Length: 246
Image 1 (tube, rainbow, N blue to C red):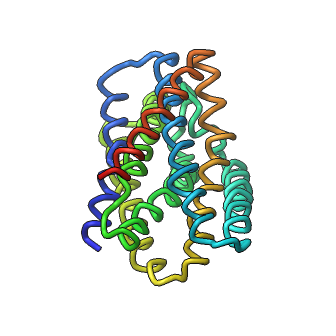
Image 2: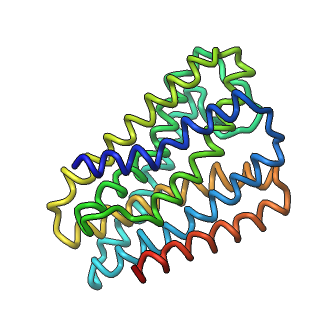
């Protein structure tokens, strides 16, 4: 259980790193967009091979993966729209100022993005007695531009540096606890329900990518964002291949 917590902590620690980078450096919107594209590519690969493909194998011809995939996508869509009504619809918007009175909906929105990934990281420890390296890399890289973009907006909203870092530390710890939840709560589930959970996370993360991360990457990284998305996908696939060969 401790390993699951530490693995989840490592995967989401890039939120803190992204906050520090945004505080110390003024990165161009174009560069952040390209990093977003790269992160989206790694997550698309992780969804395909670490979540959906594994879910289909575990489901053994049942409808659990299908129900899980669309349930995750629809639940994320509904929750994302609900949180957006409270003022956090542009949490990944590069350059958008984040006012202090929007801290609660923004935190909820970021947690909504991170919880499915973190639960799957913890679940990987129960299944394989070790975390998925490919999932860790994908989550770590994809969280980086999210934190940079969010922190840049917080700076424009006159947030103090300490407040920004403390927020990312809080979210990182919460996501790490979600990894423990994935290990402790869902580990005893049957293969069919495990397939549902993995597909559920895959659908939720894919919906997040399609509605937030990829459009923002293209808007600021322009057509080169697609190049970085392809590179990110390729890197993540290489990690999967290396992991399976080990």
